[in-house]
Amino acid sequence: MLKKTADRERVLPLLEELGGVTEENVKRVHELTGVPEADIWGSGTFYHLLKGGPGIRVCNGLSCRIMGSDQLAADLKAKGKEVEEVSCLGQCDRAPAALDESMKVFDAAKQKRSITPDDPRLPLNLGGEQNFEYAALKKARELGRDGILKQIEASGLQGRGGAGFPAHIKWKGVSSQPDPVRYVVCNADEAEPATFKDRETMLRRSDKMIEGMAIAALVVGAKDIYFYIRGEFNAEAEAVQAALKRAGDHVKDWNWHFHRGHGAYICGEETALLESMEGKRGMPRLKPPFPHEFGFRGKPTLVSNVETFACVPYIINEGGEKFKAWGKTEAGSKLYCISGHIHNPGVYELPLGATLEELVQAAGGYMGNPMAFSPGGASSGFLPIDKRNEPLDFKGLQKAGTMLGSAGVVVLNDTVDMARAAQWQLEFFEDESCGQCAPCRIGSRYLHNQVTKYLETGDPAALKHANDVGWEMEEGSICGLGMVAHKPLVDSMKYFPQAFEKR
Ligand SMILES: Cc1cc2nc3c(=O)[nH]c(=O)nc-3n(C[C@H](O)[C@H](O)[C@H](O)COP(=O)(O)O)c2cc1C
Ligand code: SF4
Image (cartoon, rainbow, N blue to C red):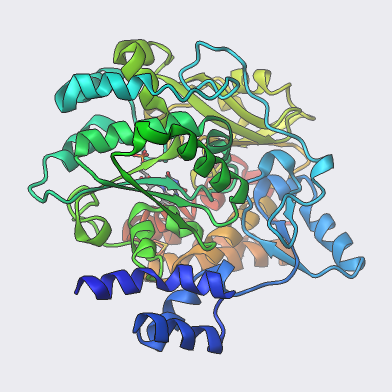
């Protein structure tokens, strides 16, 4: 039984090593693992990066689109280059972004670099130097499970992967399971358009993330720790590996494993991620049971985001209360990503609950006349700019009918057609829906088709069912993707009705 599981888990890495899904490679993987060929086809073809592909990958995400990615793709094609237009490259601060054949940022010399405040007191302090003394881990060993949990609870740390779930509850949940085999998994899949904070954390402060993961493993009693890192993040994976090497003996109590993603946004959803680690199609599981009870290989598993883990050393070193005090409306500091029509796109660490206005001030000001913003990645829809003084936090935005999500903020000025912006976001969700449940699979395609029809004909009747379909998606989808995919269109119709009048 164990051999079968282990063999199944080798399917995706083997396909990657051999160069993707081809008849010959599938046969070879079958010979090496014993997994039926049909299963290997089924799993492998789910993933964009295993399908092979042409040269330059141009990003189609919102920030890239408003900064001219369609033109970039057309120019490259006109020069005879082979171009693939992809949903998101996690490089919104370099919009319009593209990757060359070896996954390096295309034309890097011309690209902007993320900017971050350089205050040494900040909990994450992305501007600071890495530190491999591992003082927090030492202190955590002295505090023990209950002492650590006390500090995490006092810190008010909420998961930074999107849902804002209290970290101490999740940690406690895994550590109190009767099964003694438990896992820790770092979710570094980061593929929500507008989001690139985990990328910067891995490049700049892998030390903090690794130390946080080791402290989490102490609490939950895990021996094996996994990184699930987005497939396009080569430099980031190398940075983590280098940091792990420098950590040396400090982290030798654990087995550290790497699993590379293969190009599927949905694998950021924690149960899809676990399916993918098990060598299957990245389709979200029905919940409950949640991963803290039934996770990787059916064992209790703590899945947390890069930034969440990176907050932990500060909490242990300085105390939970001090971390909490950094927040404005909720606990701690927060990494906000900002891109679109602002002067200095990048990652900024600010008190949790900072407003858009404060974030934009840090990011060099607006370009043009701001009209709308998306507060937390594609999933958060759009808000009108008159909400710019509302706190960007988990609970407040939820009350306002949206969410902080991954804190990927995009600003749109009045040159953007909001119906077009909604169409771009829906194209993303239609492409990335895993297709297992009807409301999401059909709803995302329907809404995308209808807004496209409206843009082509100028007839608002094309959108008369949009709100009802959106409601069905929200109520009937298995996972968060389908529940929010309608938001960019429904929010735009609500806040910018003039963009949906007869044209
Ligand atoms: C469609 C979808 C995509 C997601 N993508 C990510 C992601 O890329 N990274 C991440 O940490 N969480 C992502 N999440 C949230 C995870 O399911 C999970 O809540 C998170 O990893 C838990 O970590 P946290 O408690 O530290 O927030 C996604 C959720 C959904 C529904
Ligand atoms: S909501 Fe969409 S992405 Fe999520 S499980 Fe259903 S089909 Fe897949």
